[in-house]
Amino acid sequence: MDHLGTAPDFGLGWLDASGPHSDIVLSTRVRLARNLHGYPYVARARDDDRETILGAVSRAAEAGEMPPGTVVMPIVEMDERTRRIFLERRLISSDLSGRGGSGPEKGAAVIAAPGEPVSIMVNEEDHLRLQSLVSGLRVMEAWSLADQIDDALGTGLHLAYHHDFGYLTSCPTNTGTGLRASALVHLPGLVLTKEIEKVLKGVAQVGLTVRGLYGEGSDVVGNFFQISNQTTLGKSEEDLVDHLGRIVSTVIQTEIQARQVLMRDAGSVTEDKIWRAYGLLRYARLLSYKDLMQLLSGVRLGASLKLLPGLEVVTLNGIMMFSQAAHLDRAAGRALSGPERQAHRASYVRRVLSAESKPPTSGAGG
Amino acid sequence: MSDPVRTCDGQGCENPASVHLTQVVDNKISVQFLCESCAEAKGISEKPDWAVSDFLAKLSEPGASPGAATAGKSCSSCSLTFDRFRERGRLGCPQCYTTFEGSLRRLLKRIHGANQHVGKVYLPPDAGTAEVGRRLDGLRRRLQHAVEVEDFERAAVLRDQIRELEPAGS
Image (cartoon, rainbow over all chains, first blue to last red; front, side, top):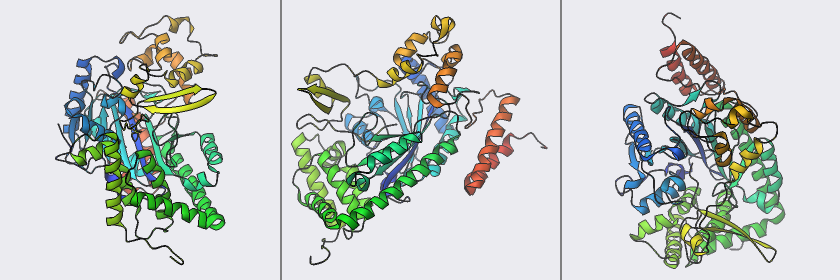
């Protein structure tokens, strides 16, 4: 089933760059892990357990105060491209989509509402993974949104909870609050000034984890980093997100200082890098996603420093989202081959940049 | 939850990568992200060992040996044994927390530096007076925080939740 046909804007709210510091912090995400009392965790659950769980969650979603337009979408009912699009929108995980194994499991589903920042994965590692995803650095708002959905669903369900251990999860690294808050940050200034390791080490020392853009075990692409809390037990949700917010604010200030140093000590080299990246994106005929992300990093820095007239961060967020493989396939109306997709990607980026920005004029003497 | 999709490093392939391959060839380390089919084409079909289970195994080694009582025990609800949990890094069901309570209490302390939940208090459908009391304490603590950070919208919601639970006349 193509759920995107009727509601194409699932999971796209954060792209609008409306949040504070959204040029540096792309998005803030809070996810809560929850399980139903009396059922085995998903890895040990039978098909009928998973379907019973989905049934109970669906009824709770209907009865609870969920956002208007909320729909329950079983993964098995989705066509392959829709699954990949949900994956690219960070609404489902690779495991839930069934990519790692023999296709999606019975009972696996995503619950979402068009244009809303909250969504729920059903029968992932835990029975429920509730998430909120908002633009910029807004930890408290992201937590509050997830909390409200948790309340709306939780009243209709009997959740697994222990008075000492809190919410009981499949993996003990999530026990307690079940809360993982993360900020996706763009730190080219710190990378170029080679200060990044020092900063990341500092972040790790205060109990946070840093990963590359693609999650656990991944390397860094395009100078994008995810910073998240490591522990989930022994602190309140407010303390956990507040701590993340304060540390990320400090990282933002350090990044801004690094950019100032760059512009002061290597202004023309930095400006040249930014314009070269822009030039390649604006005129290239073939682009792999990896190339695109590297170039977008330079251009994002340029947009943030107001060196590229008329180019807004929201445009760059859109490019990052809609030039992913499944999104390009969907726009083309068919499955593209690798080389075709690179051509479609380059063409899409050229079209967006020529429509969204005024013809660029260089500064002095341009 | 899900992260953005890393595409496969295979030539001309843009499928999402699900296999992270690190190889040492001629003393050089190469790292590749591959999709299932490109990984299979390279003769890699097994998923790489899961690092978190190693981490848990290490954490529960020194000073936290499960002891005879836990070692031989299996969960009455899902039949998971503690050894199996140590291999997989995943518990079988919520009941496992009661079955292996002593060992898990020590393990949670090592992972989180604490083993007492101080966050949101859940109110189960069959809640007794003690649970309502704990829920009220939790809500009051969160209300205080909402007021401190001037999140008055949230404070109003929390206040309503407190009123609903408070015994009449209090």
